[in-house]
Length: 416
Image 1 (cartoon, rainbow, N blue to C red):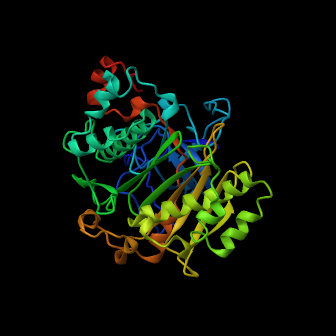
Image 2 (cartoon, rainbow, N blue to C red; image 1 turned 180 degrees about the vertical axis):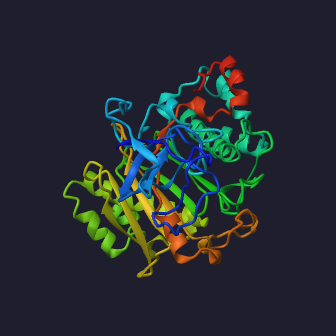
Image 3 (tube, rainbow, N blue to C red; image 1 turned 90 degrees about the horizontal axis):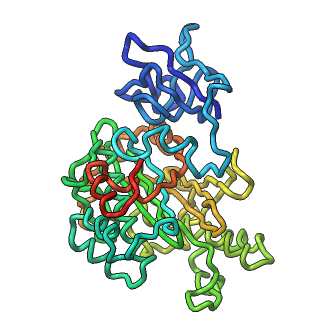
């Protein structure tokens, strides 16, 4: 994608950024600073949908390239542009040091993934590095929950998922430590930031969700809509090696049309299982966003998909959900095949506040802009705003900067 430099707005502290393409859409309070470099996500006429690389201002939004003939942004010459790694679009669009990925100034909308196979702490769970990270989590019951697992890989997944929630929360608060951050769980065990909360004007409904399976732990956060995420490993066997009879075991969890879609991907059962896993991941993301988990009758939710332009065929989709046969326009889903030789599918769901299941009501109290205050156009703008690529993070990225020296002393690798 092309890159642009902001050249206008020097007398106003930068240029105006709006949440949507239309000039009538809601404007951000903060301006995009003069001199900032941005990546083009989409351009229509003189309206540019960008992601910020350097400078200050909203991480993502819509700006005018020119107004009344006056240039506000200029496109970088090809020879000036940094070379973008020719890898899957799920990895960083630029080398990690070129933009704030975690911590202050990284924004409110995150898509993070950690590969547990790349982290092998010396001494395992009893080693200094693992124990240092474990004690970044101040809640004793959460630390005990990590240690309750028998195997190291399970312990790593449990620890990393909790660190991702806390780092996303700290990043949204522009904090460099976890000291005053209070994480709670709903009755359905969904984690949420209870206190303090991000700025109400910019992120009135900030929330975060995590998932882990196989070698990946993934995280998604949103400022206005409800986020749900799930990663599914394409392993068609049980741990004892016996094959999973997924047609029978999960027969009630997919609709007739979904099963027909699965069968068209045969005759190889592995291909069918990959198609099944995409639906399963989407349904998990849906119920995790809602908060009721597998208590929801999964067979009532039917997903419809279309490919996302710009990706290799069969590796990225966007979709919507039909509940009991009726289209639910306030939901949207994006789905990616994760990189690497061990295939996984990750789905991110965005949904309405009215569908939240929260028996105790504590999570809902953190959401300060109710659904009825969103106009239809405003909601659709948030729902269909760019869903960022996943940033694949090293374990050090989960450590707040105030604790980085201690992490390195315990044997960890500094980030950045």
